[in-house]
Image (cartoon, rainbow, N blue to C red; front, side, top):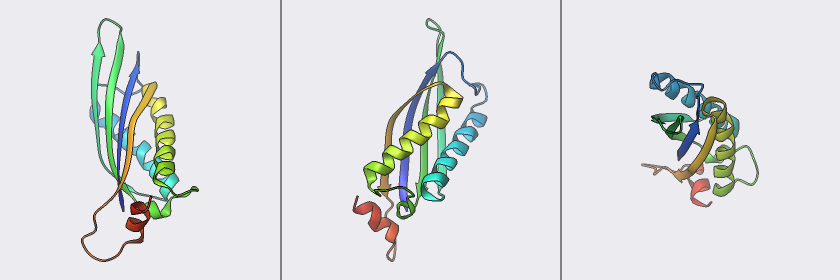
Amino acid sequence: MCILQICVQCCDRFFEVSASEPENAELMVEDAASLVLCDLFGGGTVDDVTIRFSYDIFTGLQYCSIQISARCSCHYFTHLPPTREHMELAIEKRISCLLRELFGAVQVNGVTLTPQPQKTGYDPAFSCCANM
């Protein structure tokens, strides 16, 4: 398994999600991240989604920062080449397209895919990530 961290900033006059209902917004982002994991890795687990909203009264713009933590098996990456750089770029492209529908302008600040430490035994997915 690999640990996935995604950091996103969004800005627009109007969002399709409500800042007054952050739980619903987090569920929508969790669903979008799950779709990305399913598409690129055949599955995975979204562990946490955190969204922080803010508003600039002078410009009339809404802002939000989104943090997504997930796990997936790098070994099952569906595209070639299966390098860490290619995986992170594919994740960035997919998640930004989906989040654009909800939040308007999207800037992905970082996608980090790291091997999850194994407690016992050999996991081929771990060796795949370690060799990227």
